[in-house]
Image (cartoon, rainbow, N blue to C red):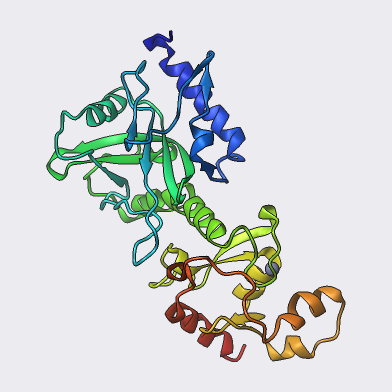
Length: 303
Ligand SMILES: [Zn+2]
């Protein structure tokens, strides 16, 4: 039987195990794999079927939290709000501050313990983000404030930040949380294939934004995403290749007229006028016509 002193080594072992299994945090993992973690001969599931906040019986503090996957409608792949301090908010379980899960998360906050955040990117699939810390609690709003490790201790929840520091907190949070979640959500929606050419090597694939995330409409939603291989991602961003709102690939005229080797011919010119080869299963995850329209209009502008 494990003792409470197992807390620190268990947490460290779980994060090391996840680092390896998730390709250094890049890839999502299925629920059954997260339930198969062992520590000192005992199985210690890292995720709970019934609960959002996971506290193994032998520990006093929470070990992980979950944000469940929501099928795409108007919702984002991540739902948690961000405060004016740039930190992310995670809702209490229910409204009772003394609920066992809320207490477990509060203990993690008081002891400044590292946690694992599992964000649902498809039914039964979770992107691990770790370590994250509980930076504070807002009881009146029934929520905790979470910080990825680089910004933990740097800002206090609900304090007014100078613009530069706030931008830093937001940038780091985007890199550590939102980008991996966006990538995994989009790649899973496109079954790990390039929408233009169907290439299926994850290492050679990106989740491209249809409208750049610097644009006011550039949300991190699967409907603003396309799974594209490296060639087609660069071609799309650099306007060699456009996708019409009815999901047809267009290649720029001067590229069509160029004479060169097989990559130009097969990779670009022969894709002209073809429909996207891969699309998500549910239509609700298809690229947004409205967002494609914005980018396609830009594609048509003279260079
Ligand atoms: Zn491709």
